[in-house]
Image (tube, rainbow, N blue to C red; front, side, top):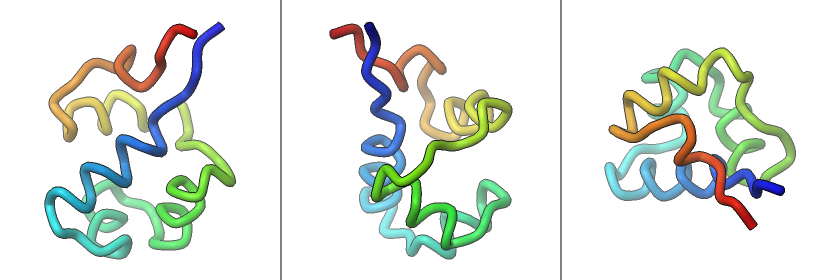
Length: 68
């Protein structure tokens, strides 16, 4: 089973770059409310945005999941 850690990565990246949720949302083309929901793990990014996030974070899509 794999654990989804994308929400943790989004929050960490955003804080590292000193971006607000609104600024981060503008970079990836989503609302600040969506970023907030991701960070609170209320929902996850659409699967189609994962490659763009991986490119932005300089990682692989697989890095958003950890094997438990």
